[in-house]
Image 1 (cartoon, rainbow, N blue to C red):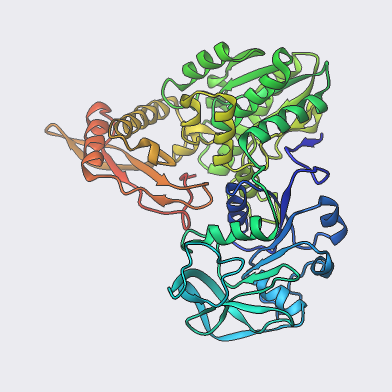
Image 2 (cartoon, rainbow, N blue to C red; image 1 turned 120 degrees about the vertical axis):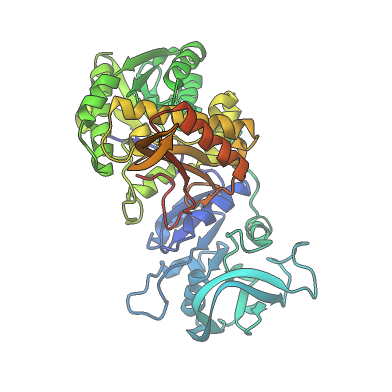
Amino acid sequence: MTQFLNEDSESTREKVVILDFGGQYSMLIARRVREAGVYCELIPYDTPWSEIKRMQPSGIILSGSPASVNQENAPRCDAAIYKGGIPILGICYGMHLLARELGGEVVRGSRSEFGRTSFEIVEREPLFNDDDFLDGETCFAWMSHQDEVIRPPAGFAVLARTENNTMAAIGDQGQKIYGLQFHPEVFHTPGGNNVLKRFLFDVCGCNKTWTPRSFVDDAVEKIQQVVGGTDRVVCALSGGVDSSVVAFLLDRALQDRAVFIFVDHGLLRLDEAEQVVKLYSEKLQGQFIHVNAEKMFLEALEGITDPEEKRRIIGAEFINVFKEKALSMGDITYLAQGTIYPDVIESGTVNGAAVIKSHHNVGGLPAELGFDLIEPLRELFKDEVRLVGAELGLPDSILKRQPFPGPGLAVRIIGDITAEKLCLLQKADAIFREELHSAGLSEGMWQYFAVLTDVKVVGVKGDDRHYGPVIALRAVVSEDAMTADWARLPHELLDKTSLRITGEIPDIARVVYDITSKPPGTIEWE
């Protein structure tokens, strides 16, 4: 089984490469570069110079790291990159590394700087040549370091200093190599995006070639090249944004040579399956197949309480149902699915990341299916997927649909799953979504949903004692699901939602609101 990505190292597209040293903001750097209209690839820090050179990058960014450059076995990149003639920007650890490797001195600082720190610009050109950084004004940035550069390499000038006289930025304009002690990629650094843009456009000479249209054109062309003129592709369609964008890409590239299979596990939101069937049977040129497998999934989940076991079972059942139907088609060569980059990260399949939660569409497809795997969105962030979907003409009913877990409501029912519990949650979730939409707040949320907890409490309904389950409401704001904050919903909205849930669903005894951010929590409860 092979994997098809939207880009590969042989691509001649203008790009910047980011050497990932394991910093917590590495993916955020990539997002910021892409937002600026420049394609970038995140690659391991120890990638040989020969491979990097073959990629023909316009620039190289060295990420942060939890390590110290002075510790034994500290991660280092191929030193040949410093003499390759390609502009380089080191961020935090990346600055320490290039300073040390090029002859400067890095020591553990007498005073660490964490969080919001002020700095003054010494030299505006080229990184601070922007209206966000005015002469004589104090600037602020997000710092996270203990080491500091006390002597820059020969030829390097100090471009900015912090209030503690620490070098906040250094650079050698002749070699086009620069270092930043702070993190320009985070929201807490005002003007940080413009610092990155000055590096991308003024130093590297990049152009804004990374656009939704360019991605669609390239992806369609690549699908046509890989699939050829006669082979057929089957697409696992969930009704969510990711698989929908893949489906419309296939539809544009292959027309009636694409087959779309919607495995309905019965764990979707209220009336959602019917909406999915109607939309795709009308919009797609290829064959659309609806498999109603609710009974099979509920039987397989009977008595299961462990969340990872639920995910495993749902993933396995999904594969079995999908496999049976796909193989019955007879002449399918390729399988397409909507895996995106956060799925890969959270499943621990990139750069040794810890497994946060497993995704049934990442690494779970058995080789005996006999299909080559097409994952055109595997390197895209969710916001990029939505932009691509808009370029493809997907309706707002899909593009603005909030992210939904592959295992569906099974991971929003804490404890064992029954048809009765599923019905309760679907009704409560629908009420919460209706009220948020009516209040005009739904578009500002990343996700909002109800959870049926595994807790029962005493309540009073009428004049009688009532003992029933608790519904938890969850609403978060986020840019990419890598981090999230709980939404500060109006008390009146929460009050109305609670009254409706406890009034319209007799079994529910109490409603609570989750105020946990990510981290330390995750967006989903399981």
